[in-house]
Length: 434
Figure 1 (cartoon, one colour):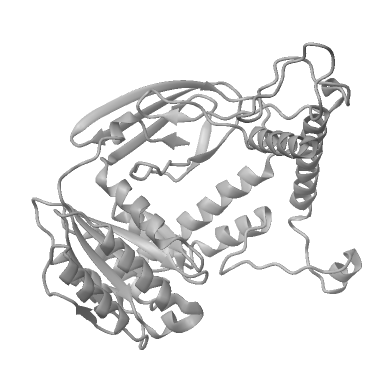
Figure 2 (figure 1 turned 120 degrees about the vertical axis):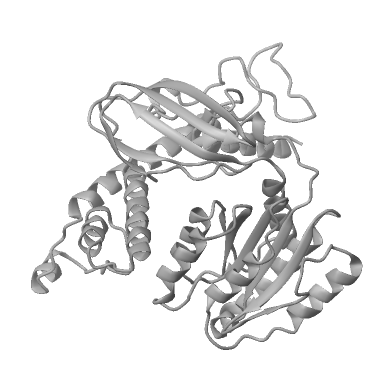
């Protein structure tokens, strides 16, 4: 995991240009998608700064702009934007190419242009290759951001468009806080971006790294890299990035263990990312036939559902024999179950440990809890199950890499759960005593 460093904390006071592309095709009437899009765009417009400029484009069969040029955010233009959004009615099919081409026309070489597409990504299959070529032809000052609307859609296409254009992908659904999401989105864009991120790994015979090329690093959005290695050994991680024309380089030393089993979830995440890359690569070439066998193999081996691999559940082994269905993922399912049981045992041990520390302190002169909140115990826990008798959590093998060379580390998820359980138990114990 590559986390943003201090170099990305400075806030820019320069204005930027925004073109919001709103999908109003017929599919957007399903599950309230059009309402989600309207609310999201309205909040994005509300948080724009005085030096920003914006335009709205509604698209289905053909794009339709609001102002025809970039407008400054004022009470009047914001009201016009809201009226424009309310007037949109879903209908027709989704043709993204024309809307993106129209958005590119607002590019200014002296300012950053952020094209923000709100859609479910369900466009014509024949348009995929043309869209990916169009993204590569964007102006030098433009980046494309894709926001997937609703719980159904082609997020893979949206993610590919954003990554190829140096942007980000996000999702909005019912119940989201649109204002908070809009502010968080703008905070990312107001801060510098680490572009041209490179990562070279030396040692441990590392291969199959996904993604093959790290994307841009935005403030508040870490990059996660997945890979495989053949032998445990010290590894040198050489990182490089470009921030506002300044080249930064850093070398981190880590050591990979000789055996790293017991975590099938990470294996599945690696395989899922590889499947997505194969699909995007095939779409860029306009033909998926060569990639399908490998996608199916990964789906079967790692229990990943896709357009080319789905799963059924039968009652027992006899049913599988009856229907002549090969259980290619049987070994992985057994490994998953064992790993899940280990996690359940660890959580139970943490619960027992937390429960053993709840209750009045024993002995004269025991430290009293502060009324301001739970105190951190530094003395042995009172009578209860001994910690040494509980199963010990697995050793954490994680590294947070801060590209600035500073910052703190990450908490293991089990540690976070244990802290929350201990805090909650102490809180309720005090309520009972009161």
